Image 1 (tube, rainbow, N blue to C red):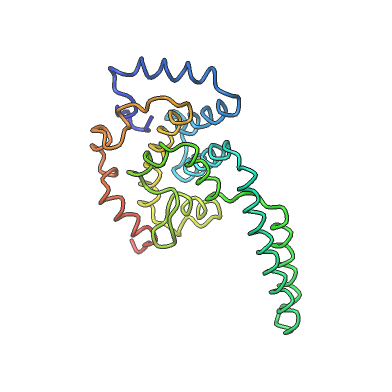
Image 2: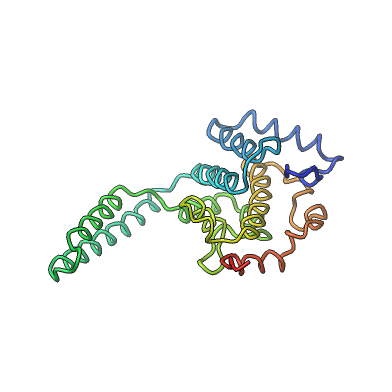
Amino acid sequence: MALEPIQNLCLANEFQSHAQALVEKFLVAKADLKEAVTLLSVALAPHIEKTTSSNFLALFSVLEQVISLEKLTAEEKKKLKETDDALISALLKLKLKIQSENEIHADILASRIDGLIAKAKNPSPSFIVRLKNFQNSHPSFSRYISDLWPVSGNEKKPGLKQIRDSLAHGLRQRHNTQAIAVAHWHFARLSERLAFILLDAEVPKGIEINASSLAREDWYNRMYWQSVQEKANDNSN
């Protein structure tokens, strides 16, 4: 539920049926799925006082765990391996070029490249790769993020991932306070929906796309949050 005592997760007349269905599905779920849903619940808990930034990081950590539930196929792993081999080859060529031209700080640069090569030799699927894999396995997920602040964006219009990366690296000032607050509100709505999606349960009307309970919140208005997203890097105020 949201921090404020508003009725937006589940309407009073549907609470019992949704709660019962969710509990029943939770009890028969696999252990890793139970853990993910439990972590979602904890991250969303309104009675735990936490800063917006810390809660944003907590929600993203759970999202990473959730999308990791879907494992890559052998074919997908093969494609990743092919791109990793190409990356290692390109890094080796760059290292040799730097060393042959005797550039400034060549030794340090070569050492840094060796570190990148070592990392590429023991790769793990990127967040975006795992996210796409999760979306393929849960088609409804794409629908339920269509009205919210996007999970992935770019430098000019940051998504949840870009904001998370800034917060995680101590670069909170990269995005203004309003952008972080609005994105966090959307992230919480996504996480509420995600719990139901994971357990293959019906998403309550209170948090359905274009639900009247969500529409009462100005931050849900698409024109508003897209405007905030476009100005997310503006810290002039």
